[in-house]
Image 1: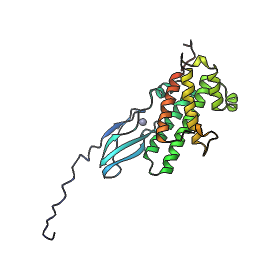
Image 2: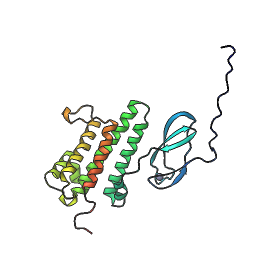
Image 3: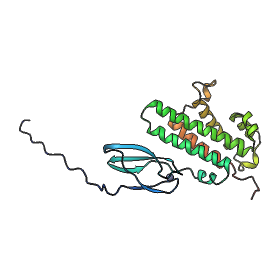
Image 4: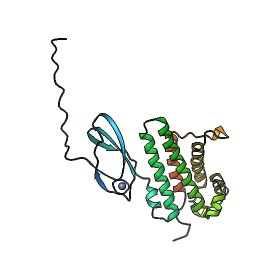
Length: 231
Ligand SMILES: [Zn+2]
């Protein structure tokens, strides 16, 4: 090998360092340039918060070499935009479910299993709290004192046995109950090391949290945003 001549590595693609790509925030619409944090020859991801202080949502980007190649943030579910203009109870439901989506994204980015577990458990618990607010305050119209005395399984039981009909869409009662039960079981499993009934354990894996996000959206879509007949 002594006579081998090593040719120099090919030059790096020049790109255009003066023009970082612009990405539009799917939450607030603000456009901003996003730069890769480091130069990397393999695909990497990073998270940052929206530049607009009033938005401040977590956004996740993918980069290669020294250029941001894609945004991985999922757009907010359509119901979130709808709920944000509907008064404090539904705004709280929207805020909690957006926080659950952010935590799910952070779980995807987590570097170790403890961090990932914390993010997915947090997402599951946020969805469980959101379901409690949605069913207790919005569907059943209970005040704070009554809601303090009832756990989510008792709220679900009231709906299963026929209460809250004015705030449910026609034919959607059993779907609402089924979706709320999934969110409840995942949230309860996430907040405990063991459950009394093993058959009711739903571990807070990424896949199960993504199912709960879909179930929660179905739950919102099974409810009426206004009381039947209200203008
Ligand atoms: Zn934004």
